[in-house]
Length: 253
Image: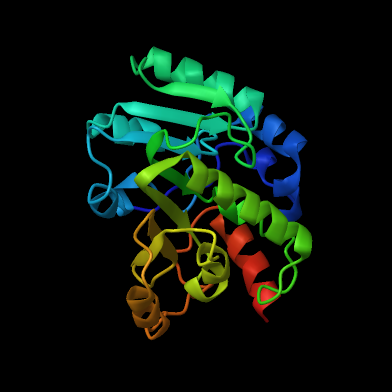
């Protein structure tokens, strides 16, 4: 079933560049109670539960007003920590979880480029659409601006650092492998890279990066893997997601 547009049309930005503005997010979260980027949990639950176990300690980056942490909790994954850069999003998420009785979930105001956690403390780090924000002003996708590269690498270094030795990073995104591999495959990282797609015509990618399992054999195999294209105009591309997709298509043209 298609997801509706944002409850309040006033939260829609005029361009994708607004997603880089912290003030935009504070204003949006003050007005908006819930919005799901890149489809809701039901579309990728079957993939998530292959990698996140009930005993896993999980960090969600950029929780915003998503229900992802609640869905994971209902599936028995209770050791959850959510972060967001917006203090308004954090306070509203805390209250929402308390009201629903999900008191075990921790919600913190924090920057994913400078995570306030010790090394090796999470089994899983997950993000849905959060990394995509870093690319809205990246320029040529084959040769992104140095500032974009620096931010993305900071994010990935922090994720790699806080993961346990055999931890998993899950990234749910529009970013196709031929654009994301240059970052994920940096020699400083020890993780292997796998991906699935969900959505009827492969609109969204579900990456699974397993720390400590990098191998040349798997990289060579993945280089030969056919990557399906993404259609901007397919009816399944729903809600506000088109702003991300439009920005990416303009850069790829």
